[in-house]
Amino acid sequence: MLGLTLFFMAYLQPEMAQIKEVAGWRDDDTLLASFQTLHRISENLYLMLSVLGLILVLTADKKSAAQWHGEK
Image 1 (tube, helix red, strand yellow):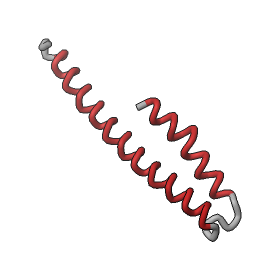
Image 2 (cartoon, helix red, strand yellow):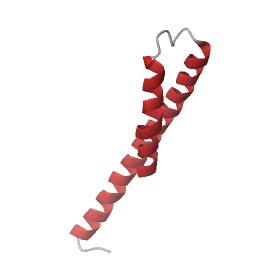
Image 3 (tube, one colour):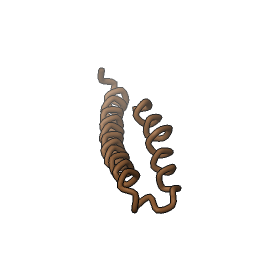
């Protein structure tokens, strides 16, 4: 999860921000295609990180509850 988050924060978001800084980027087919590709990757990565985080929370709760009740 940490590696995916670093990729998201260090590569995807800066690349998307750089494209958005270019004037008229929506009119340039190449920049628009690049942005759309990065955006799709970003959406899927965000969904994957959310699901992994939810799984982590749910499994951590079960382990904590088992320890609280003295189970192994």
